Image (cartoon, rainbow, N blue to C red; front, top):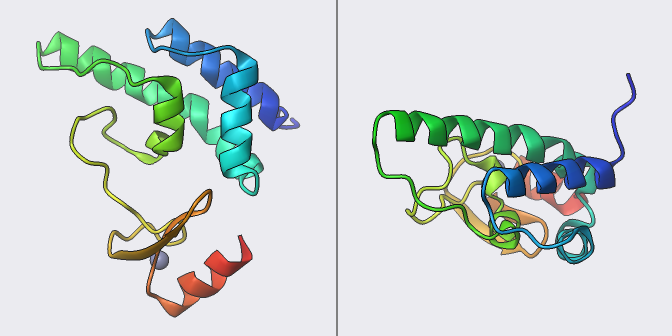
Length: 131
Ligand SMILES: [Zn+2]
């Protein structure tokens, strides 16, 4: 099976986010923001969005079942710009943990817009430079 094109995957995620109750703009402005910020990583990120939103919907249902506090959905743009699809426990109000985009460790030292954070490990610095 061939993977769906990134734009299509992004739009599926966008629609799902809106259906779940998030504030979402039209495809044009959301895609423009996303593409500008992550243009080097579109193929990598787009397939992750919808499954992440599905996981967050399930997590929220669980919170609501337990009558736990559940913060409102962020604006989709905020969710995208904060790379919230990388979080396992989603949508908390705690500051997001910064993780190295290569190895996932949290002792990050440097960030480049659109590429995310990286740690100090030599192999990560080298791989990060090639993103
Ligand atoms: Zn690393």
